[in-house]
Image (tube, rainbow, N blue to C red; front, top):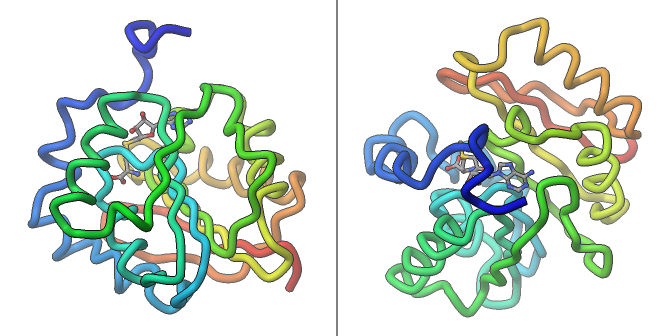
Length: 188
Ligand SMILES: C[S@@+](CC[C@H](N)C(=O)[O-])C[C@H]1O[C@@H](n2cnc3c(N)ncnc32)[C@H](O)[C@@H]1O
């Protein structure tokens, strides 16, 4: 599918909001993910947008770690690249172009996976969640966070049920402003 046809995904014009410095006050990446990511980890940011989380993940994994920043849209990946260069962490980041229905990282395993405000844009969630499971190391954590204004409680409940069917175990809810979230693992 061409990028022009991706009418249901968040357009690059919203980057100014997604990457706004004010966002750090209510959605601080370190406060949200800091206790689940350690130096040396490999992390994946699924639907990385403009790199708001990918760049902070790169700081958390340190020199010996790696972040795979995945997005459908070339313009989003380019924003991520520019932000990572500006913040001096680009050498820890691999940009990856996925397809709408295919993450396409079948040779990779990660210690931490993030899907922040993107799952509601994914057309085949069952397939996506199965592919996330395949990406995870046995001890890995997967954080799924959705915007509460787009994803109502019934829809989020459905996503949790789909995650359970894919093989994801609920570890703990992630409570943040304007969001519904859950931390998953492969085993409890
Ligand atoms: C609302 S933005 C959130 C960006 C980022 N996670 C953040 O919180 O700043 C959603 C992002 O997910 C990407 N996206 C949507 N569907 C996707 C899919 N099937 N696979 C990968 N990325 C996708 C969009 O291109 C967009 O960059």
